[in-house]
Image (cartoon, rainbow, N blue to C red; front, side, top):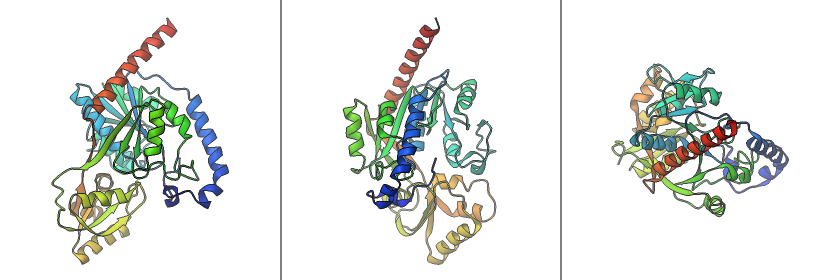
Length: 347
């Protein structure tokens, strides 16, 4: 899977997208076939998958965290299942925030592990078994919708209202991971995040297909300490502009920005440049929780950058406060129905 989205993917389709149409068609044929014909293992507890239509961030991780918080409030013991993107560990591993760094388990896994037990595994079936053995009664899978090897009891697909599905072309001509028709057939509901019109066509398509539509927004937590301050904002996420808008939303005056690729590990030179530029211009450094996770546990300049940076924490807030509970209840109902069918098939 392509991890970095070229800027033209998020613009109106032009000659670059059309020139890659044969390759996109081949990619879409393979991805669609894999989704249709995937042989999926049955987990012993319900599985909710939080995915998106495209390469690049749409808010999957904060959505997963919001669902876990709702599950805990309902008396459940959720566990996160992540591939550990950006980490070096291949073995199925229970994430320990005291022991693991992002370069081992991935930045998103560290964020998830702050909320609930988290297992990283390249083999999600094996990871699901580990979570169930550790006592999880609900698995929340962060990403993996198009490549799931587990039977999903609820597939929530997140779409950013400002970016939508970009130019609408499949990889490599655009950011779409698999044919939209196949994704639409297999998803359980859509979560539209933020304000904007770019997702409206997909939302209407989902509504015509009878799929539930949920709406949410990313809300920064208060007391970030940057209101009224001149800020050097830096971010290595899929959509850095989203973070810069968040900084402005909490009152920061963005004087400088530094954008890096998603999941980027800062080099010594990049760290020194950030520190020196901020000091020279009298700017406050600000970054995301995901970027900060990649600095934790390091010494020297990285530790200094982490200490001097204000971290803007965010939450995914559903317009309907009951929506996360509805999703969880539906997943449990679907799981029970599935188990009854499986028992009947083997009876």
